[in-house]
Length: 543
Image 1: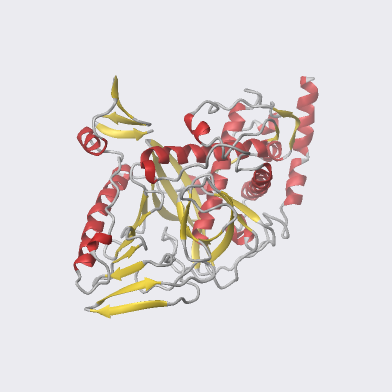
Image 2: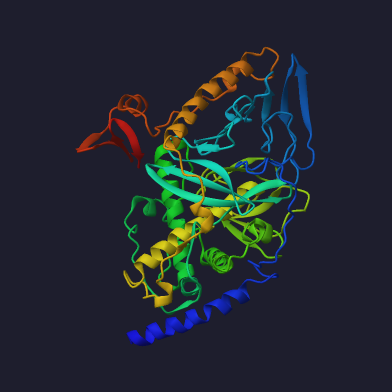
């Protein structure tokens, strides 16, 4: 029986290359000849930060100009989710927001409920966004062109641009709750934007992609190690894993969703009551079999794309980054689903702001007009609470849409790594010899600039610097007697636990712990639903 199984899998993998090639053609997802609008780069080539797209269309607004500063109240909404703005804050403005630009070109945006939404510092080229989920996202472009992004106490990265064989690449060094990892991206111009498409730092052989793409000889059951974890019970009404897995694509769907929901749960513990909450328990899971099938179809398309790229790179051929990114997805005439990999605040057709978080699912049914830089999607699944409601329409900037697709491919790759390491174990079928060959590192990854030893400290410093920036700009805006809003409208920046903070700083934020554990070089502080890990008296992880 074992020999028959291996023989069957080998035969399936022998067919993989032709099957995958048939899947990826100019008229289907992944077609290598798909074209994209490679507009002139709106940013300097090699600059690692995507340019912000211009607002599409106009909207009704009122502006009061006096004393060298002005305030804008956004009262309109246009197709694609964009609203005209006269300040340096280029993201779409939800209905009812108020904006104020200072004399030096900095700006703040206030939500209709009086809470602080955005701050832009013109001197540092820093943007700070306060999410509806209670988190804060800080982004800054440094003088050397590198890009720092941070969410205090959560994930952050430093991105640096470099060139390889005449093409622009970006390398990101990620730092997430004490874990460090790398990702690579290739830049391409599309609709006046400069987008980064995820490009694997290593590729598997065709035999492995075929094993992952094609049906297995027989469906298998799999015992996930997280089946008794708190996050799984918390989101029990949202997600349930498959009972059996006929192929790796379905296994990868559950792997993808589980990784996202674990991240969402960690954020929930850190953010507390301000975070989104799952819907009441009862009834079938929000992620229905139909929605999961759409994700599985997208996973198979991405596997086909990656197999094609691996074949081209092995043959020293170039590949089209637009075909690997959303340029193809917006031009192939097919619906596509996107799984949210990070918190976003979006705008619905009425101009009202709502949130999506890790594990939510959006669907692009029809591509946007060629002259806009945002797309209208339908929310297929959300976790309820303060999130965008399932079935509603939302507008997503193309830069964010590309990041969602990047997230899908990145998580698929980490899942593939686990699949190969666990093949033949825990119920997974044994892969044929051709699928057990280790992956090959990409040439562009070997020449990427190394991360700086100060990156983690710089991310923390950026978060602390953002505190001072917000205080200064908000103070200037609110002290201007000719503005149309008062200082009392401005919500204070959230106080969060961040990597590198001292024991005293953490206790000042969270108070005394419920209990502590001294484990040699580590000290763990336990709070209600949270663990803070210290090394050398500094925060090294938050769980």
